[in-house]
Length: 125
Image (cartoon, rainbow, N blue to C red; front, side, top):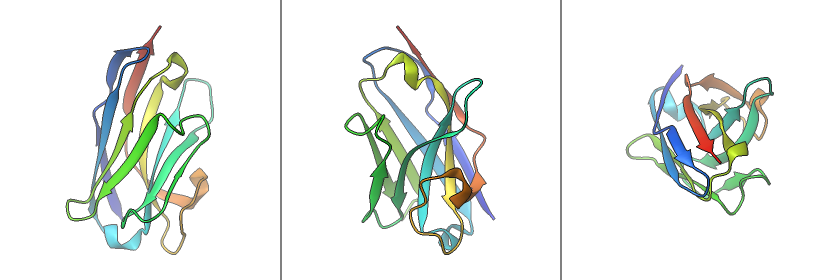
């Protein structure tokens, strides 16, 4: 099991920035990649970005590419999501996730089996 705790959410105006953090503990070595997902009320959980622990591979969804940056600190077991130029449509609960053992860079929720509780991000217009 991998335990994940997100932090850094909040209320921000459109065009602003937030940085989310995800602290991982437990069997972190069992996951080769970490991801960020978001879920808005009444919508499916949506992939945002993923990164390998080494940082050598990164993937973004089209809706955030160029605005969001994912990064990892292997030594501290931390994953970050820097979000810039935020839009009202970015409003959601953001979840950190650890990939299933043996799965490389999954971009759907089915590739992840450990999830954090989430942190709320609200962007006002």
